[in-house]
Length: 414
Image 1: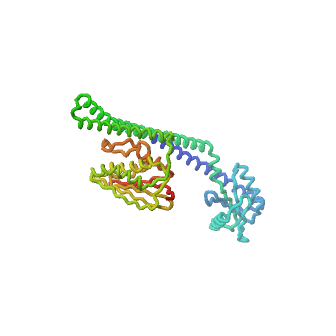
Image 2 (image 1 turned 90 degrees about the horizontal axis):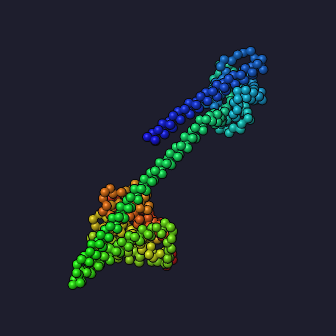
Image 3 (image 1 turned 135 degrees about the vertical axis):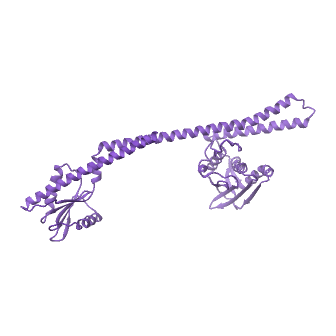
C-alpha cells in the first residue's frame, strides 16, 4: 500500500510538473511573439515603411522564431531592438539571431552567442523552407537554452520534485533494510534450528550410552564396554568439530586467525583428503576420480586450512550427490596459477541461489526437508580462507546436473 501510495504521489507530481512546464513554455512563447511583433513594428517605423505586415512572426520550432520584414536590416539595429523588447518583458535568456537578405541571398549570424557549425547549418536549412507572400526578407531568433530557462523559473516545482525524490530514496532504503533484516532473521532461525539438531543428536547418543554404562554391569562384557566407550568418543569428537567450526568462523570475523604458511604440495593434500573420504564413498558405492595434471602443484599456504578447504568441498560433493556419488578432482596450471576443479553429478544449485552460497549461514532453501545437515558455514569458510591465501573460488552449477567448484591459487616454483 505504501508503494502504491508513493506511486500515486509520483504520478501526480509528474502530471503537475508537466502542466506547469507547458504553461511556462506557453507564456514564454507568447512573450517572444509579442516582443518580435514590436521589433517588426519598430523596424517599419524607423524605415518609414507604411506597408503593414499581417502576422509577421512565426514559430518554426520549440526554440526558433522567424519574423518577416520588408527591407534590408542592419545587425546592430536588430540586436539593439531585440535587447530592448526582451528586457521590457523580462526575457533574460541567451539568444542568437540570423538575418536573411533576399537581395544578396545571404544569411548573417549575430555574435551574441557563439554557435557551432551544425547549429548554424540547421538554422539556415530550417529558414530556407519558409515561404512568404512577399519578398524574403526576415530575421530569426534562436533560444539555445530555452528549456533550462523555463525550468529555472519553476523553483517550487523543482524543490517539490527534489523532496519527493528524497522521500523515495529514504523509502527505498527503508524497504531494503527491512528485507535485509527479514532475511537475516530467517538465516538466524535456520542456523539455530540446524545447530540445535546438530548438537542434540550427539548429546542424546552420549546420554544413552552413558546410561547404559551406569545402569548395566559391563565388566564381564569388555566388547560391549568398548563399543559404548567408542560411541561416546566418536560423538564427543563430532560435538567438538561442530563447536570448533562455529568458533573458527568467530575468529575469522575478528580476523584473529594467523596462517602458518609453508611450501606445500597440493597433490599430496588432495590425496590425503581423498583417503579420508574414501570409506564413506565406498560405503555409498561411489567413485572419486583424480586427474592431477598440474606439473607444478606447489603453493605457499597453511597446511591445515588448505586441507580443510579441499575436505569441505569433497564433503559437500558427497552430501549433495544423488544415489551413488561421482566426484572428480582435476588440477591444471594456467599462467602462474594452480587451478583445482572439484566436480560432482549431484543435485546442483539453482541459479537464483548461486550468488549467495558463499555467505555466512546461507543454505539453499529446501522447505521442510532437512536430509542434509549443516550450519551454512562451510562454503563461507572456504571462500574466506582461499582469499586469505590470495586466491579465489568460482562456481559453475546447473540444477539436477551437478556442480563444479574451481579454486585458483598462486603457484610458487618447485
